[in-house]
Image 1 (tube, rainbow, N blue to C red):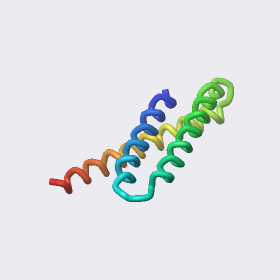
Image 2 (spheres, rainbow, N blue to C red):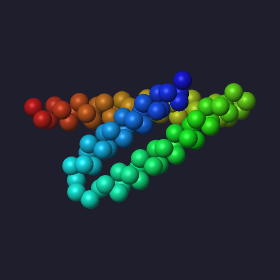
Image 3 (cartoon, rainbow, N blue to C red):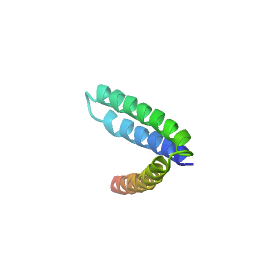
Length: 88
């Protein structure tokens, strides 16, 4: 459950950053670095997803991470809305 939403969030953040950073010259390396880090985060999340069945601390961590991910997603949505409102 958390893993699927977090993957969507990572994809949204990656897409958002790609669009924002592509506007600025010289950030290709930084974007590749961020993409690599998100890939590592995804691998850790997949491992934690499997371990949460036996480890309550990991389950608690994933629940908190999921709640935070929803907040980050809301912030990105608000930013996109504000950004699109400024274009008009």
